[in-house]
Length: 272
Length: 160
Image 1 (cartoon, one colour):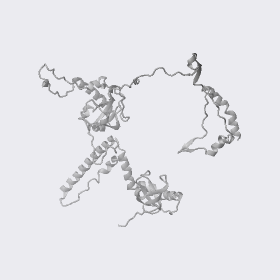
Image 2 (spheres, chains in turn brown, blue; image 1 turned 90 degrees about the horizontal axis):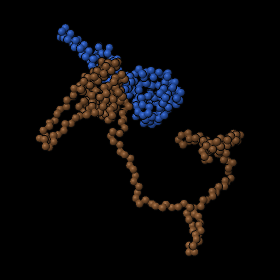
Image 3 (cartoon, one colour; image 1 turned 45 degrees about the vertical axis):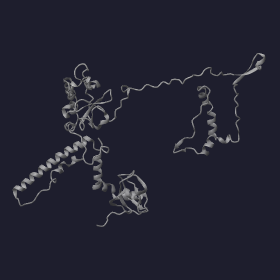
Image 4 (cartoon, rainbow over the protein chains, first blue to last red; image 1 turned 135 degrees about the vertical axis):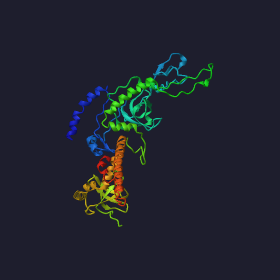
């Protein structure tokens, strides 16, 4: 009981300060009871009854404070004989006009591919060895270099080891292994890290006036000289990084070997 | 051949399924045909019922009464040195090997494959050598040496 009195004596001092802060509104204190989990509370109903000193309020009835009603209308005197003398007028006037058509709602603009958020699996970091699952190089183990603006992964064999050139691949068609090469010191040539570098150039059809439409034949892809030079520079960089790995000898054979599943191997149960 | 391992008080069992998978318990009492009362003081498994289909019986058996409390069971367990005996058993070693194999990464699997190739090469080479020798010496003597008995022993630790 003594405690109760003490807290009661202290209590008014503090809330007074907080009340003043929040422009006159009453601020509630912290609840004395708390949920222990599973809907079990620290204090029982009886304990709370004593804590709150509810016995003090039993049988008492607080009177309702009657708020004075604000008038909605006002009676105005009207001149003229045939006008009835007075009229009830709304204090708050109704709107004078209403829209004839629904307002035009502004739709948010659709994002273009350029603006899409690019995500990357956390297991894929620069230097991670990936297993390609699709495309002409499927089954090869390659080194991940970086993610390009388009969201595709820039990857290289290196070409010298397993004949996989600098390529863009989707991360959906790739298994990330836990083996990593330290590429922290490696700086790629600037051009190589751009999407445009890898775009295929389509040769246009001849115009109708000029000869046969079907005269242009399909040309096989051949890497340009610039590409070959870039590939060589990147290869030397990556191979230099591989050489720093402690298992470098096996890592070379690992990268040159193809990935495959043997009997009773299930990729969803395996660790990579 | 008669059965050797019975569902009985004191029988140590390997939990093959459920939340306690891979731990050892001992049977305290039998509830019915399918369930037993089980206690695993060494693996921190509280006393409770377990389905017999989740238990695989081991060759170990402890001696304590079926009314024995966890304290009694714990004492019997430590006195019986079950944990040591278990870790020495072939079964436990196989479980351990299986776990290791499952935790292998792609590169580790590759390394293992390469190591095995090297070992097998050595082994066949040694075998063929001995075979040739025996043929040269006496055709009648059929003392064909067993393959894989000699060389692999040195290389085996690599097998993980």
